[in-house]
Length: 458
Image (cartoon, rainbow, N blue to C red; front, side):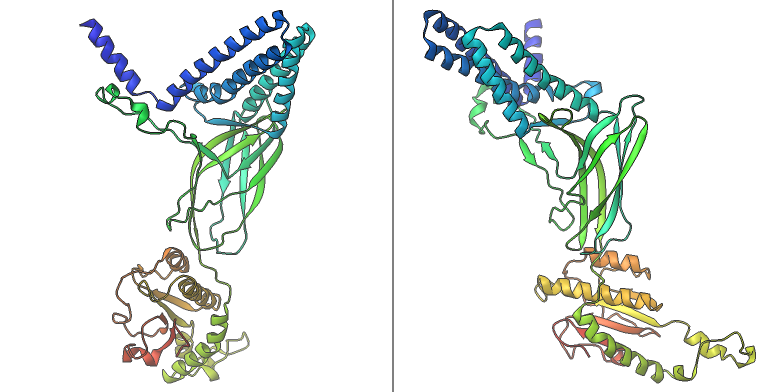
């Protein structure tokens, strides 16, 4: 009974293990065994006077041991669950480190061939420098806290500045040569979930076990384009203990939409640049990028015509705008036309974006229509007009930021046109639509300027 229980516990523990980790572990044992065998035969060849066999076998032993050390030991060490090592730290061998390890290999071969104790001491010192470099780089990255401050309003193709703040929470130890990077690699972790029946078959034949575990991490945005917020590098040469440093970085977003970032990295090559250590920091950041509000050729072309139509609309309503001037301090209060002032206090404009269904406007033409709506809304907001907005699926808020956020995320949809449900009011309607000419409701013609997205306007 106890034997079967122990067997079940062992099977459950084996079933929860990672396939890749076990394969690397047994591969490391095999590699070390081969390296040890090659070292023994190199000693035999050296004693028999065969210099060529000694050099080949000694080189093979060093190469196998080095391959195991670089490919297996760090991979298995990252999977050790310790409370003090919860933060993920990865490493890569730099070009300088590769050259340095090559020199160590050459010196090691010379030491094995000659049996010179001084060369063995040199090899040990050089290898200890690699170990010290790894420990020092890990210590530099510990105790650092990263804070990201993003701007509130961001427009496509308009550079903005963001602030990265790095704080050293340690009491005595400073940090040196730390870079904040946006392009971070994440280890793909696949857990083997298998039943006892599955282990009865050769599970290693089901999937290729030689796939590389490292993949580039891309952050999926709402539009499915996978865009990062920050993809550059910010360098901090020195960070004293219990202090903070800030760096301003320029962000540039090529198009509208939602940008996401889940991870940033703290990278260092301190002290010898043999290894590049990267500590991944998880943070949930989302940023909505508004469409560009810079004046476009289309907006500059239709603005004069909109102004003329709006003045005709005001005159038709009986607002005598041309005989009213601004109040001056020397004017008597009895000369102020309070009724006309109340009517002309603000220009009332309603921006109507009649979102076309898919297939009507595709690709760049649709993006131009969205940017035209954003540009006109921004222009009239700068003119202190009283704005209101209407669009399929829009909540009806009069806040310009809410409308720009709607335009930032809008996609061609199947919602019905808003023109049929649009009520006539004191607002002057600026309608952007892809509906065919002749389908605009008659009640809107007298109080609207219609911009047909597939051609010239009204």
